[in-house]
Length: 204
Image (tube, rainbow, N blue to C red; front, side, top):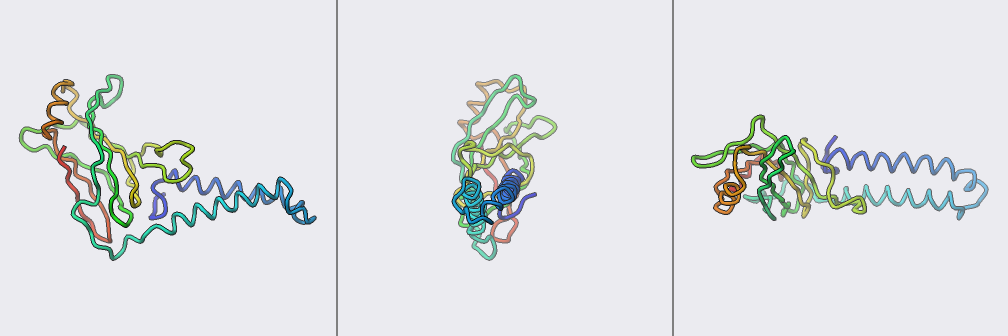
């Protein structure tokens, strides 16, 4: 379940878990609070969980609205890209890309496609690609959310990792050379930003 508040299903689940924990803590702390023991360990834990839920919801709610904002030609900036070879993976040849949303509003990203122009590299069939959004909250769990094939929202200044599976017959030297020359192909990303649908094309 994704919305403008949540980058993906994982963030939604985190809020639900916090709410459930808050309810159970409230039930446990209620006898102490009823007896005016407002600073008991159970009561303090309940206060802390309530503050965490409020802070998480406020942080998401305070994100700028995507409606009625000017749409830049390239909402996503390429932070880095590199080819990778993973012999034990299903998709053994990948182009990996890190993007960043440099707009002032959330960007909805749908399943990408790969464009092979004359002289470019073909994909591995069937098409393979996933998204891994940067973790904005609860960073003690790590800098990145779980990998997902689903469309997601990327918030202002948030980074996103993605990859596309390429022709598995490519050698490492071929991949490195074509990547340096930007002759691998074009990553096309369908986006909804500022209330408009656009497709950003990135030559890699």
